[in-house]
Image (cartoon, rainbow, N blue to C red; front, side):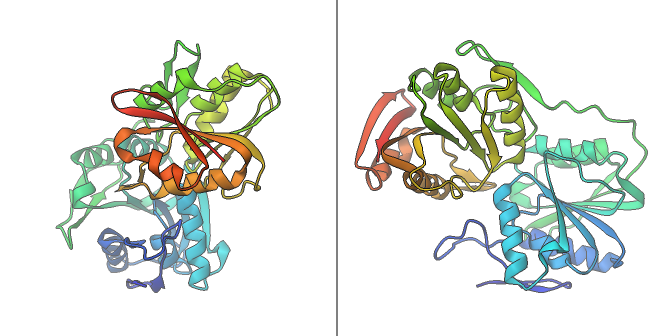
Length: 374
């Protein structure tokens, strides 16, 4: 296993969820560059450090015991990775204070270390929330691999924090050093909203939501073909995003018991607010989770899913395949998994390896809607 070596620690780190023969590391050169810079500048044990978007805890685990560390991000899988990496390296579980991105970390902070996220709207919202949370003389440093560092990231730092200086590139990584200056209280452009005609609902979307400005085309292909049931059926919207599939299904199936799950805290926040707006006090479970990993076996009749094909910057079907396996375990015999996916991803063949029957419900030139029966 690769060892993450910095001036603060030498650590064994894993990604979460773990894969056999994992091809990717839980850290990169941008993490090392950021921690080397921090060490060179001098970190006092009493300094309060805020980490934003520390994917699997490489920064947090390295700094545990060296400062007062708060980590904040939007990934529940990332939070689980941080917890696992603390345990793996014999660090106390309470060494790091974790704050979900749906909440605001409370300063004042002496250092803010940022891994630039894939979604720049998330970065913008995080920078807006830093207003009033910085200690006098605080330093704000963002880091990314060059291939994942858009010019707009520096523009956002300059807009909300202050003048930005870019470092030299080291091992294809770069730092952006922002000098805080007095700024007027910013007004966040998030959440955004859009309306649907069928069903006739308005959907609210917090900053890190996929397709925040409008319904994604996969879900658009799925919605007209959602099943309807009149009885008491137990249903999960797996990877729920803003909750649109679960809400649309619930509107057509008044007695169904719904559970909406996503690994994004902002997705859970959005889905919760959207459910209340569309369905009032109708009972529902909406939670951040590692898919259906915590769902009891044989406890669901139906799973709806528009599976992701990436984890942060990494594209692949590992998470989708894992979600299919989780769905199979959670479904009763005869239970159904309904999904939508790009044609080229070949989900039909993958589902046949897990389920006794797979049918194509509908198709567009780009997407297929599939029903798999346990």
